Image 1 (cartoon, rainbow, N blue to C red):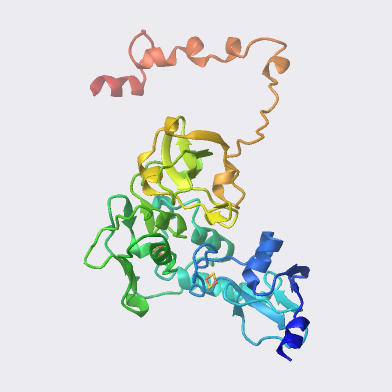
Image 2 (cartoon, rainbow, N blue to C red; image 1 turned 90 degrees about the horizontal axis):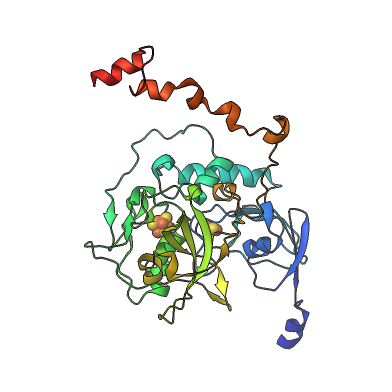
Length: 374
Ligand code: SF4
Ligand code: FES
């Protein structure tokens, strides 16, 4: 009898999200089914991270509406569900961006996430690659209705390379899963409960595992930042290139993104996919060790493969330099073949600079007097 029931389960489940139907393997979550469609149909995920077991179910940004539960029971579900934690059913019909309820609830979730999160993007190292910043712009409402004191924390150095700025943490728990699943001993976690909850190393114990730097990569906001990169540059001014090296650590994939300014390597990170998660290589997540991340900061430490494709919707992709097309040079054409310098070298013609710095005689200007009085 049990065998007969098993045979009835289709090998692929048909699921419709925002009017697009696909077939996925049984057991796939709604979020991962939506990722197979891609684009705007995919709900945002601030705590789920496909490479970290057990992640998800904390932030509620991935809520979707279930219009029909399954082909067998097509009744709608009364409440919105967390798509990262809910498996699809055959014949399920879902709404993400086509649901007013979802968009309204998500705006509410973003407002909650921003209750205590400071709006310090102009000075935050995560700006430009912060998923909360993206969400804020997409769903945020101007102003806040929160009238109470925001909770704040002192910045904490957790180990030589990582700084924790707890004030920005949204308690997604991803970094604790990295510590659990990638490092030998987890020495940090979430202390306290409710609005007192905080990530900490407890008795300020330093995190010094070989793979601790991956916490920085999984943190969706600027709560965990790379101390070797802090305040060095804005990410959108840097040029990301894919590179690799033969790392002696067997657990390290050695494939990275170098964030360069000129020839200087300002930062090394794992390579990210379109969901902002670390890419997989040969079926394994491409985590990198701290030696590759923090100690190999010369371009000759690496074999450069070429410019990184920034596929995620991000301000970084504004610095297009792949397939860049130079505008047509039209100056000689409009100037009848003459070189622009002949007409436009204003210093040579006006001698303004030379006069102002007092090298040549000329009419005294207020600027000249200021300079002489100094
Ligand atoms: S520090 Fe970052 S990764 Fe860790 S719980 Fe907070 S937001 Fe998540
Ligand atoms: S991503 Fe689903 S609850 Fe956070």
